[in-house]
Image (cartoon, rainbow, N blue to C red):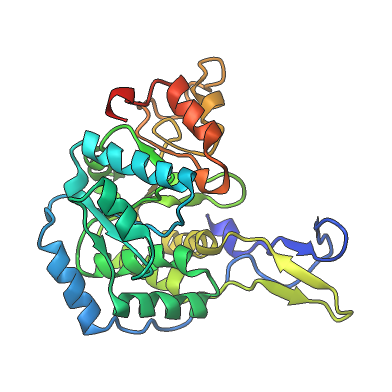
Amino acid sequence: MAGLLTRPATLMVVGPQPRQVYSEPHDVPFCPVPALDLPDAPPDVLDFLRHELKNYDVEKPVVFVVVQFDQEPMAQMQATNFLCGFHRLNIANQLMIFALSENSGTKKLLHSRHPELSVLWHAGLVKIVAQAASRANIPTNRVSKLVIANLLVHLDRQVIVADVDEYWLHDPTRYLQSLRTAGRQVEFAAMKNLGEDVVNSGFLFYRPTPNTKELLRMALMAKKVSWHVLPDGTKLWNRADSDQLLLNCALARSAAMGLDYFILPRAGFFFGRGLVTFMCPMKVHLGTEAKIPPVVWHSAGFSTDYKFETQVLLDLDWTDLDAS
């Protein structure tokens, strides 16, 4: 983890030609340095969340998801798959659904299919998210996961952050709560990412501890540098992945400060299309991954037409056609 704090950012040359990696030495760090302080949350937002949390078991983590999509069929299918999984596992009572727009079609769509679910919206919360997005230079739908996690953790709740393009096969609660490092309870657990980042922000587990509160503070007080201009006018683009950049860099700093964290095994918590290859027995590298059954698959379906992901669910017999 410490290597993230000393490495340079990966910059891309922007121009008429396809983007290429800028290979010359430069002084743009991969990890932005967090500022000194984070503004306090407005009391009305905290009161709103406290009121909603009265309906949730304090012994179990609150699972929250930020839902904001259009009426595309594939987006509706992803949301349906996600929510049906919670009903099938009988854990819908742990789920909090947040919308970033009061007048979007999100509430109408979800209520038409799942009238028992509550979609939460609060003007003060949306304002906090917008301020964080401006401060960190991160899109609102990305930074909202850090903002809401920070609020819930500061209200002393265990938290699971999820994305709608996930398929939940099993309830991860007992597994996550049982994790230990050197005999101590794990404070933070995360799905492993592909590529340069260590963790993927689509599935995260937080315990409410001073260390996780500091982790989230550092993530929210850093600012991503999107562009760098050379003296000759050449424009370079920082390809780091928004909220994951801030989270991974904050994790690197927190690990050095004693945070007990755990990177979840891919066998149980997989990200990306490579699931098909990974599930093939000839491709599993025995001994390098914890031997647990699949728990959550983060399909990354928001960047596709979802046809491939649907076929995977059918091929692996993970779809209940009778309930569709």
